[in-house]
Structures are given as structure tokens and as C-alpha cells.
Amino acid sequence: MATDPVEVHPDAPGPGTKLPMHYVECFGCGEVESGLHIQSTVGEQQRVFSQFKVTEAHQGAPGLAHGGLLACAFDEALGAAVGNLLHRPAVTGKLETDFLRPVPVGSTLFIATIVDGVAGRKIYASAEGRLDGEDGPLALRARGLFVQVGVEHFTKHGHPDALEKLRRSHEGDWDINP
Image 1: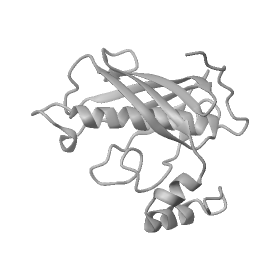
Image 2: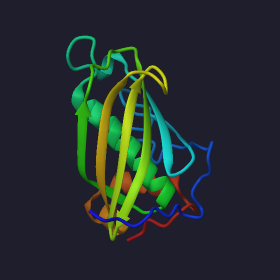
Image 3: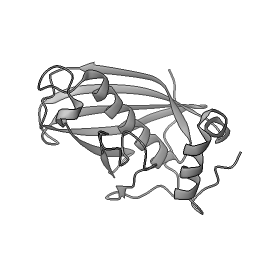
Image 4: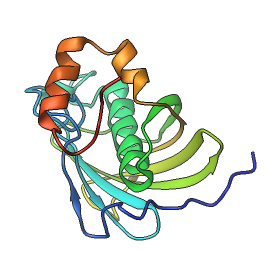
């Protein structure tokens, strides 16, 4: 599919910026006890680098990360790149994950994400995950299609209590009123 070049938003955080969690109760980047606690940093050229420490709470098969949880980590990393670099609210439309090798408990997954292109409301991004270092063995690849939505998507479909918590945590940052 033909896409337009990516135009990073003028207010996007610059290279070297550590990204804050977008919501304290987010399973991916928030403070949820058994969550992923992903930490992301902006790089050069539409890239975001994320790290995820695999704990015992994240295992599927004994001693190995659960595959669905790894897909969740990539969804979070891809979404962080789209949201922070483009400043467009978007939701996951499609996520394709290729599992290339097992990811053991105790390892750290280094995820490098790039926003590949935009076609109307569609935003394409891809990522690679390496074990225990930016140059470690390649363990996963993922491609995501995100669809830009209006804030009303979240106010219409989200739980009112969660939206109120989000509203309070971002007071003055942006408007999430319907």
C-alpha cells in the first residue's frame, strides 16, 4: 500500500526524551502491579526504543514469556511511537507478531520501533525485539496498523471512572471532554 511520508508533530518529544506513562493504570506502561512497566525513549528518525523486563508474572510456558504478553508489549511499544511522535489519538487496527525465538523469564526485551508511513487515517509502524541488549539476538518482529480516532472514541467506549482518572492525571495537558 502506498503511504505518505511520516511527518513528526512539531511538539513531539525530541531524541533522548524518556516518555512518561500515558496513563497510570495502563497495563503496558503504567504502574499496574503485574503489568509490563515498559519504558520508552525517543530516538532519531521516527524511532522509539522501549525496554521490557520479563518477570515470573509474565510467563506462559515454564520459564518463558507468554506469547500473548509479548504481543501486548509490542502493541504498547508501537502505540507509544505513533502517539508520541505524531500526536494523533489512534487505536490498534491490526497487529502481526512473528515469534523467532523463546524469550526467557529474567531477560530484558529491547524493542526498536519505527513509524513507517501514513495513509489517511491509517498509520503503519513496525518493530524488532532483541534479547538482553540493543544488539542481542533477534527474538520478535511486529507490524501494526493503527487507526486515527477522535477523542470521542474513548469517551464513548471507555469506562467513566477510568476517563475521570485520566482527565485528572492530564489536567491542563489536553482536552478529553466529549
